[in-house]
Image (cartoon, rainbow, N blue to C red; front, side, top):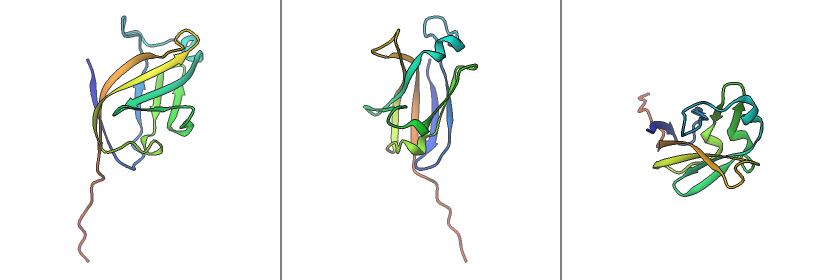
Length: 114
C-alpha cells in the first residue's frame, strides 16, 4: 500500500519517510540504520541521493525516520509513484523500503488588492 504526499515546488515542506522491512512491516533498527551509506529518492525517473544533496536528507536512527527537505532537490512539478531506496554493505545495489505517490504542485499565489 502506498500513501500520497503533496508538496509545493520551491517550498521547504519537509516530509518524513519511515524505513521499514517490506516483508514484515517492522521499522529498521538503530543498528540497521547505522549501516546505511546512502539514501535515495527516485522521482520521475531521476535519482536524488544523500551524497549529491546532503542537506535534503536527515536521518533519525532511533526512530528509522528520514526527513526530506524537497526544496533543496528542485523536484519538477508533476506526480509520480516514488521509491525511497537505501544502500549499505548488505544492499550495495539498493533496497526499496518505501513507495509512495509524490505530487509536486505549483506554489499557490494570492491575489492582493492595494
